[in-house]
Length: 278
Image (cartoon, rainbow, N blue to C red; front, side, top):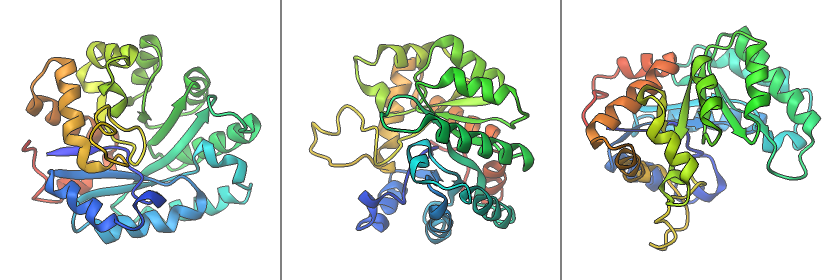
């Protein structure tokens, strides 16, 4: 049984084929997917998708937040709106945290002050409601670590992690798991592969970031977009890099995700079909 801790099912690339995308994931025994919102206005849509396709993928959950790449389009009133959405979702078992939030110091043209405003405001909401966070940490690890240390955040996932080993250790000490996916399947991704090999197994979770971060073989096989059905193949390559068997890796990353996102764990524990069988 496989888990995708980061998948944008609401992306426009999937709009014409979402039912088949979800069905394909189910056929590959992907039983749990986390769908993070990226804009405040998208919150109702991710809720709807989690409800609509939760009968296909029983562990389909969502988080609510404003992605740093969309902060240039965001407005101050988006924060109280987001808080309203969070409050309304607390009674929904498929709602598991705040995200995707963070800082991006790689993409040009983003207002650093707006990024920081929305990131800090959302961290405050996470602390207020004691919810874990899904972090975007692109070339911003130190700034994010500094912000986390100023608050009592109940852990989460540092998505698509590509920092140093020392930064990884600091995220782990703060209660975070680290997301690995298609980027590690490239032979030239030496730093990511070293992290995948050297970090404690109980700090790692699997993700696709569909439709983005394609694995190395995607273009070779003429496939247009990454999708959650590919997480088993990606995860098996990660296990091989790590030097452990597929079943051990599948079990470990599932348990890691459940540990750091307790609302997700509660949802899965209530479903008799979600047992650890790889």
